[in-house]
Image (tube, rainbow, N blue to C red):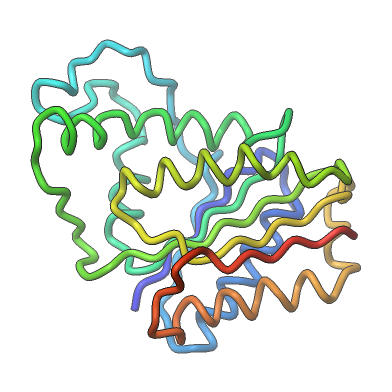
Length: 205
């Protein structure tokens, strides 16, 4: 089974990135093949709403967007990690998600079935880390990710949301958060029955 982990954080040694790697370790321990992607290593420009994709489902912007999308569509499991900026996903995450307008057009305007090279059912886990104590900051994250995963025809399987964490690498001091990431990453592989709603883990550090 192929698992792709996408880290959207612009910061090296970020807390969401550290949790993503722990989740990937959990998936690997269950026998999965893993691939780690750092979004900032790719050039991904914002959607310009040209609507050219309404004609053929293809985004005409020449950058690295398609490379990252192909990796996501080639997986059986997907783990997406983002810090929380202004109560939602970070700019890098939102830029990539907005570019998936071509997938939305392919399915909803052109009425064509999405073909994933990974085959089977795509299940996804979301990791988000924010500095505020408020749980409200995860509401927008949850809604944005659900809407995007619906476009990819992916099953939203689990969340790990951690609040009140700011300094780079600070999450390593919290073994519970690290253990939960590892557990959820492993269960993303080992759990056969799809839950009716995402497994939701929220931690306040």
